[in-house]
Amino acid sequence: MISMLIAVIVLVATLLAAIALMRSVDTANVVAGSMTFRQSGVQEAEKAYEAAKTLLGSLGDGESDQPESGYYASVQTPSSHAGIPHQLATGSPYTGVGSVVGATNNVFYVVERLCPTAGKADASLCIAPDVSITAGSSANQMSDTAFALHGVTAAFRLTVRVDGPKNTVSFVQTILH
Image (cartoon, rainbow, N blue to C red):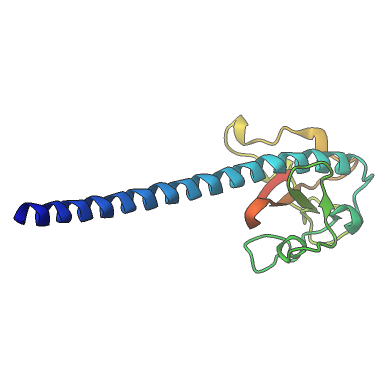
């Protein structure tokens, strides 16, 4: 009788340990899945980088807004999210943003010229990489000149929003010139 009581207690303890192990493994799988979706979103942002490169190459002087393409000649008012332009933070349907065709996820972007106002870029008012980034190693220097527009002395900020599966959202920002 006592041995049966001890066996039942051991069986219940083993059952509780098995349930705890199963919950732990399930949580690990959920976290791994979320990390996978996030990583795929960041990789999709590379497509927006290429689209922005093409866009900036076709702008001409870049002195006026082209919201239908997702380009703004001045810094946009950020939303309540840290530094994210309101065009991307509001959610679908998006207006005034560019989109990447052929992406696995929904990829939207905004390119902002880092100047306070539209019009001719002024090196004393705009953030200009050649002027503002002068110290540090060569790794800190801007060297990608594929984005330089004729006569423009300002940098650009690319903000990308990737809407992925299971309501995952990734934001990526980078500075271009």
